[in-house]
Length: 134
Picture (cartoon, rainbow, N blue to C red):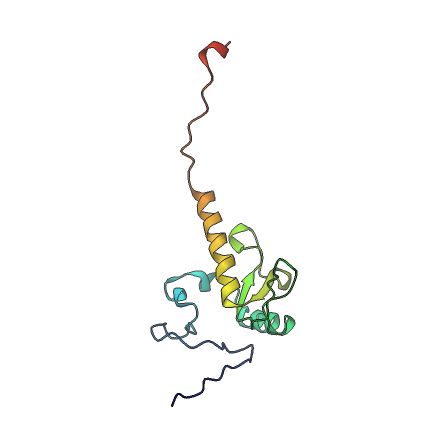
């Protein structure tokens, strides 16, 4: 007989199981933190800001669907609306609570945009026809 799995809806704890290979202190959800310097760039009061955002957003993901419905999943990830790499701050007005799916979706699109901006252009200038040169 299988044991029943209960999910905690406490916004301070993740309802998702911990990844067995995740480093200690990562919570298992963002195992990428173990090789990242991102945590070092967060403000000293990040834990306090995170708790305030979770409380403000009611523990629910703030992502909106195309029909303006709010995502029903519990929020576990506090996200910078405007990334700090693009000049965003860690003010409460620039922080939002997202579920893991919407956080991954937003972060991956931002990563692609950042990579495209960092990429050097290899396009040659458009040549003009010799007959049109003055």
